[in-house]
Length: 449
Image (tube, rainbow, N blue to C red; front, side, top):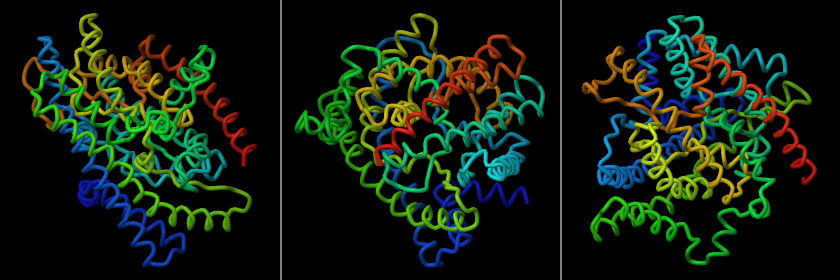
């Protein structure tokens, strides 16, 4: 059974999730033809998004590495991206136990009306496995690892309910929400956003990508913005004119393709969400149910990509400055397009691009610092599981640690460290504030209907 499940998971999200969605559609009384088309379209959307993301990463990462090399700094921790980290998580001997734990918690919370989210994003259970393996590795307790993962699962479901109305307003896709762990960063980013309400000048600016395009004319076009930022990064990396132009066009191409590919998510998800909502409302009168999904259904929002691209030079500068201060030892490479901060920033800022950039820039040092802190542990986990071979004196890590302050707090609190316990208490307080804050946002959205 374990071998079969590992084989299915090894197929990747582009195959695993469409199969889940087809089965869900049939369970919710969709016609076979519609369910298959919706599921296949979802697979195409995931594949297309990964192709464009990979294309952009391959354009920007070499330029970022060249910039670091020009500085002469010796940064020994390499950002390897999410795929090797997921491989480390799946290699944990007790990984598969998290499947029944996540499903049981979800059904329990649905039954007691503690959530209205049916999380079908079983692929990203690896994020909970990663937390459980880290806590178990540090504390030496398997039970504590599972408890830490359970805490994350509960918070993801509560947060999915909180965000649904805002997600619907922004994406236009009804009946869906996001259960990705990156969204837990909203508790921290929401506080920054609220503080910006008190900053004169900034509190008056409300600009999305469309409004930016209207104000800046040709310079607000995705293609032109991508070209300019791509050229800037390549120039900072010391590229020759030819390579600068090639990099600029590549980033420009990605910026244009993102919203095109993202339309496929709406085509795939809308019919399944409608069918699920109708079926569940018939079974449970008076309740609204949402389908919990991975984040890429939001990838058509230009604000995400403008923020993430503008953040690249900021991220590189901060990495260099923090390294001089002894606070960073990471080379931003595979995760340099940090969607894990841009996506939750989209939600807390309500699509306000100006605020998204400020919020993301303020949060970036935390990603670098936590990635640096976790580098020795992640490297040891990779070696001990036989997932990766790392040279002596070299470390691997991951910048996009998805709510890094929360994961740092979990890992160290469950290890009995006072700093970790204090950080977890602070996060709990932040989440409690965020819960009320998002409820007020939802109330305002209801009033404007």
